[in-house]
Image (cartoon, rainbow, N blue to C red; front, side, top):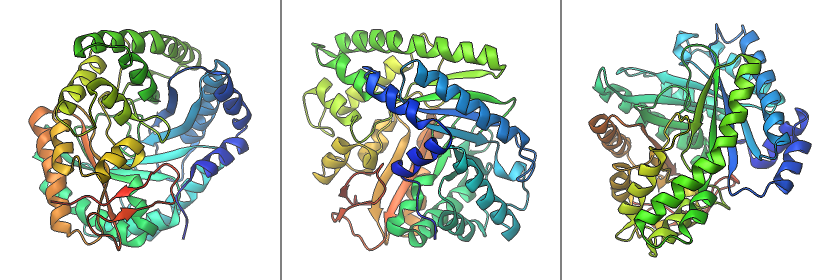
Length: 417
């Protein structure tokens, strides 16, 4: 069984691609309160075996990563997103397709890249073979992500697809250590193509690229001296535009030189284990995350993200990934908020329910209900949301959880209902 791709593994494959020395130097030299979480190239594949465009994308990413690192930016990951898998492999649940995906996973890893195969279900239909296929894919690959589309403007809420997504989450949880395979799978709704963040990323149209950030430090710095929410808005907008204009300028220059369209920056302030969005929000409110005024803070941040003058793409909203943020994880352990509160915050911001630890025996029906609530909220406001749920085998609500994945922090299992 393959283990999930760790931070150490990724730096190893960056080294194989000739990128690690530059990344290390940039990380030491840059005095910036943000990182480039990902440079993501979108490609239109003809099949799982005709991969010329994928190889071209790898070369583009390696060149672009070096350009940004030479300019003093820390670049954490290079990624490729394809169009929906079923569009270039109709028998995607077959054994032959699984073998081809395993080979593709090894190929991109060898070049320091991770891969999203997009939506495996795009419209409102079920796929009975999907859960078993997904479990096997997670067991035998290390970096492939994918999604199921749970709602759309054309069809509203995708009830059949949601049922398949819930069954898939349960199967992946049973098949992978600690249920960690669900790190690479989500149910999404109204997520646009060109989103650089995984697992939601998928591609349509001409080959292109986009950028995603890890930027809670920008928020923390802006809020540290703000006297009220109005001043915080002004300070954050000024800070983000000043910091990101040079990123945009370099990306546009690369776009012209390499003749690859640039979609923009997903300005969602994705957190990391040493860059907490929860801490930034608490700096603004002066209260623990989950307390009254948390909703107002989420709305304030989102208002700024939606008003920036730079070119944006993807979610460009506030991310609240429970297990990727030490403050959010700690406040969850203190039971200051739950799934219902996360959905409430998503009404004014966010990516929905992201890396939320749930009891290992959560019924498929309960997973389906949670996903449906996310889809209903997305459908109501036509905003991009997702549900990346983590049923943890052998753990019940309130029990402590620890993960081997270095991108995840310790917390407790949250109640599913």
